[in-house]
Image (cartoon, rainbow, N blue to C red; front, side, top):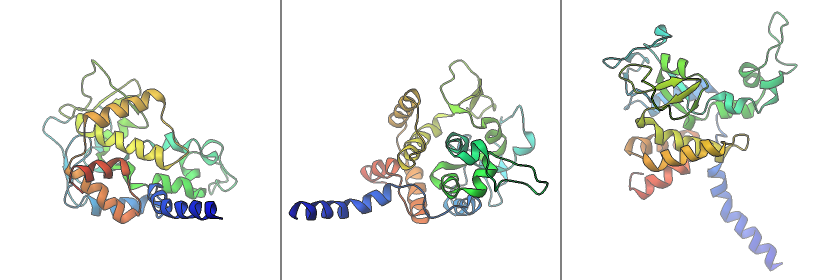
Length: 247
């Protein structure tokens, strides 16, 4: 009996911590996440990769020397970029891979992929809407990054002129300004959602970036605001922020 009571007490003590370690459980709307993120970034309207400023309507002031080889029409607006591409976890859902009886358009044609997973699977919608994984990016940069994995691209020139983002061979090397945040986002997504796992090589890269590019005041402020809105923490950001006195 005593052993049982001790186990129950331990479980009760651990429950709040476990609840906080979970991913997004409060919001299954990507559109709603984007609206809330507009609040998070209200006093820090700066794009993730290129450091461009934008206004309350999402209109971007492009940095001097910015250029894009494709998607010019998407260069004047921000888009909310999934640091961990939705496809990386979306393909673990059967609705993404195979479709569903519910995924039929008004012409009777079956569909699958992101639209189907979003239509029928609440777990997918919550992962897609997780604000810790969403960052403002110049639309053209978001379009060209696509679902490519991050990797160092030695010898490649920046793809966007003065914005030091490189894209080549279906891979993307982010500027130094984004690498630490990317690493801590990937660790959070892997820790929070059992469907996602990094490869050993990718995890080693993220560990290196986490050490080389520590948290700054804005990353801490962003995480604190998202925690208040979404109801769960990113401990990979919060713990170093607390330790540095920036929480």
